[in-house]
Image (tube, rainbow, N blue to C red; front, side, top):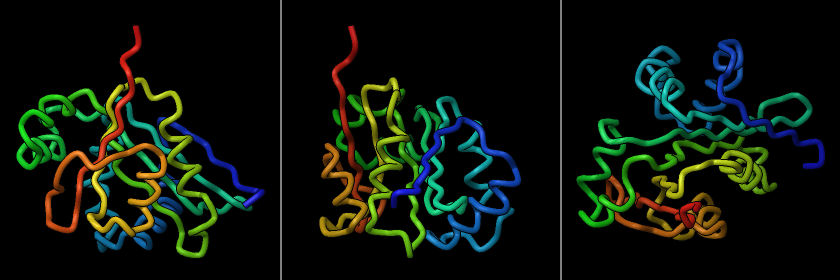
Length: 175
């Protein structure tokens, strides 16, 4: 998509969340039925975390994709649950102070055009953490899992359910 614009921001205007991000999130993931529950259980907590950043992809001014993450720490739900499913040494090496990639979502009509790859690159560009983590499908042929694998992520352990895995990408620490 030649007219694709991807911007990374640390805060998102409420109107963008309500009018664009939530409807796209709901269409892509379908795991919440209403905005209030999603905001209360996910968005408000995540967007307030240290290191929060979101990448928004627009074409022709229309939001067609997004991705976001933040600094994962002990005491946060995902990190603490990951500590119970990962082998103890992996959990010790990876969890706490990592960049946690929470979601990448692309409008169905725009999938397969490289938007997910662009979102991932923009979202992680300049991230200081040496360890990045996410949870995705255990199906090696799932498009999201193929994207992560093709950009240097590897499975580091099981996910929270049998159909998920936790993937990580490590960078050398800076001197």
